Length: 326
Ligand SMILES: C[S@@+](CC[C@H](N)C(=O)[O-])C[C@H]1O[C@@H](n2cnc3c(N)ncnc32)[C@H](O)[C@@H]1O
Image 1 (cartoon, rainbow, N blue to C red):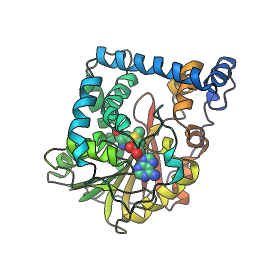
Image 2: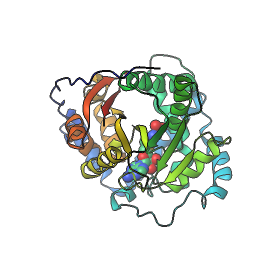
Image 3: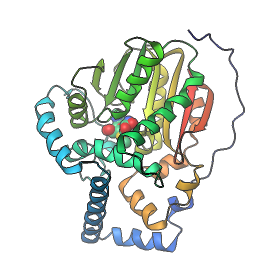
């Protein structure tokens, strides 16, 4: 068993300024922005982009369309089980995300999330001919390796906030079970009933202890109940105020000494900072709160939420992990 380490606190470097493209300063980005404001053009452009994404994914071995149909058929009967009618959905969450008009609250988004997550992992290492599963494993392993030094006590219960269809939740479970050499209680939480229904399909053996339908900022879960909380690729989907509220809720849910791990786009990444203007503009138009994300000094926000010993570490060429202790 690992022994508790003495508490240390490292001075924090200043937060990186947002990449230039966040403010649309590039003339080409500005032009695409204007074109996207014309609804029929936006729809045409998105249709083209979507077809390109699906074709590219299928060429790399991700069965995008076949899997979408299969998942929807299996998940639809689980929608009732995955819905808590008492949950209040914040207005910001109903925005159009990833070019889905209903954002995360629709079958299309839920039944394509696994494929989109696989494509995302492949994009991290564009020069390598990895299989989708290899890229996903490498992505998650790098995240968990970055968390490890902050875990100075056993993990009995963990929560994956913004779990979507459970790709990261199941990877977390796999890693923790090996680390602890026991069956660790891992739970997932998301605001989208459709995503949670697909997560249940993807977890046929019920390895995840619970799939909670709840808002991350008002989970309704007991205080000081968790040893580890992960927020994998969630904060870029939140307005700044919601991020503050979610971090405050995570602080409430963690036991003293518990660990929060937050992984998302790295504002210091050379790849992210130098995204070509057309790609950056399309990205921004599908991610309504990206400017909020890059505008927020997350290490400082973590400290304001009651966390200490905030560490940041690039885990791959595009993403960083922030790890903090409650
Ligand atoms: C990009 S996906 C996360 C992917 C997933 N964690 C992974 O590692 O593959 C973002 C998820 O956060 C969820 N989400 C966004 N805002 C939320 C909130 N306020 N409460 C709960 N879930 C939220 C969305 O429904 C979506 O499933």
